[in-house]
Length: 556
Image 1 (cartoon, rainbow, N blue to C red):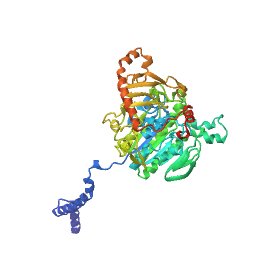
Image 2 (cartoon, rainbow, N blue to C red; image 1 turned 180 degrees about the vertical axis):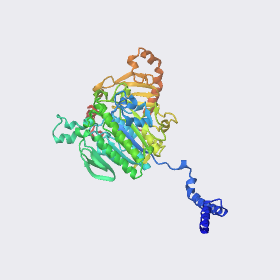
Image 3 (tube, rainbow, N blue to C red; image 1 turned 120 degrees about the vertical axis):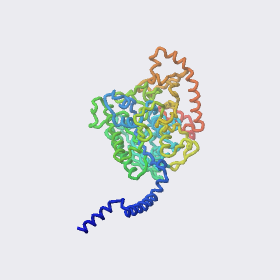
Image 4 (cartoon, helix red, strand yellow; image 1 turned 120 degrees about the horizontal axis):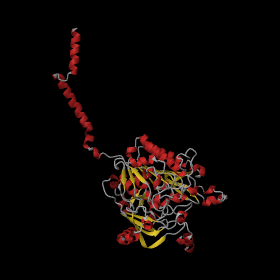
């Protein structure tokens, strides 16, 4: 009994921290333990949380093909009878642009995005055809090359359209891997046409290349191809032609490769830049059986729903890996809608279409999710263009002075670049913490002529495309002796010219707008004195071919 009583007393004392002896012992232990804890935490406490290096953001860019401004339900609010909830999610969790500019056609829009330069400056204005000599110059840096000093893994998937010679392929322009096609879809399926020459030599000389799977290397790969030149520092596998049948599922192939790339970068604990370029919705749309009839509204809506589902799979990958919070997601397309192929064609509320001088040729859908910078459900009405992403993204990755450094000469990816970026660092605009740095946009045609200028709400038109439909690709634009003027805030669809009974008076009273327009054009053209066009734009006509015949061989 006595032993039990003493045992209970000892247990009670062990629980009683007010007992004098135990209190002294406990305080001594706390002092010792606390001192050790403070010493172990000292390095962390010495550095404020705000000064801790933040992980570099991952970047996922999803670029559709010829997708109309009005073909996404974030813009049309369901008016077209189907929804694109996954694309809309990017806007709902970030920002939607109303005044975003791509370019007038595929090659120009893609080059503007990946180089941050005006397509006139790179010479990449005309849609690239198989075997064309025009392509992305090694002297013009890509976003991928500029991200290399920041430690990024880089991958491009899907349509490229920046030249099909080996020297133009993505894996010699900063991308670690590339899996994709090199042309617009209706060039890919030409060999299957009944009238296409059956002679294999014809296809070998003039036909499209297959879908390529390439990897960058550190040394030159021996050999090359007579038509497409030396391999350079890359290895490539031709996975076969992009046939009509393969077009039904080619985007699924590109999607799988993109997800594999993201998985690998995540395992390697490296920030990544992934550029996913779908074949949807370029003509001609070819759907797998399971996708046909999904909407009951036709082939284009069915294709958009399929495309939206693939966007959803990319977003799910980020969610599943737990990296969505640190991944910038951009969705956009290359150029305005090609409406003349309706019902297998895009829809836009703007005047004109792809390859015209009107807003319908250049104004494209765009949205960005950038958690921590861009507030959710933001609408951006200020001007923004595809060229702005290079400066903005490279700045976010760790080089905020990239534009000025490139003017002086900047080393990246084993090369030294000296170029004039035409884009701006728009992070303050995206965060709604500062003004728009872009007040102007120049409408360059695929022939290399200046069709117009927008500054603020004003648009001056110097060249007018009067043709419609397929003729916009064949008929020349008309040079105006007196520029035409539009207010894109009060007349965003450029309808007043023909529908207003008072347009002439309005125009005369606003002629003062043309004076600063001349100054802006002169300033822009002045930048080409030090940084001239890299090459002449390609041509669909025989003019350049005839000129070559007139020139001596050394000039060709």
